[in-house]
Length: 177
Image (tube, rainbow, N blue to C red; front, side, top):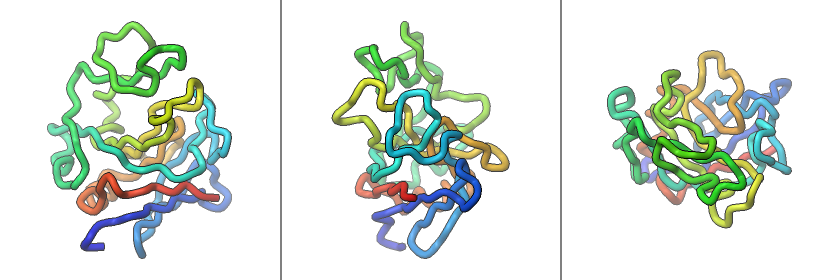
């Protein structure tokens, strides 16, 4: 894995639709998945993790909480208090970063629960963008006990710190059944 990872493979844990196993080369890590499990028909608000291959495009990190955010080949941007992500299908900035305050409903990237201390953007519904097909599908940090996400894939901070140096914008996350 010295040269980096080309593929991360994610599948549900047997008997636990909202928890998964992430394979990185020969290593396997626990992860959280969406509360709706894995779905081939992803829709906005369904809580499902989309089935398919998604390239890791770039990322965001909290410099004050996750100093390893710069130890990667990915383009990483520090998270500030004015960074949000639009989740309204009818808005012109749907599934895009926005500057807060913002008129439409959005997710705040600077979170008290620290889930986005390291947050990588997956290319789900980015280009082309389809209204209502799901927004803010990220690879981010997990809650204790790997409780469900709203459709993202989430790992521990320790796992993320271990993977980040091996990731690039050529890395693909494959969510399979």
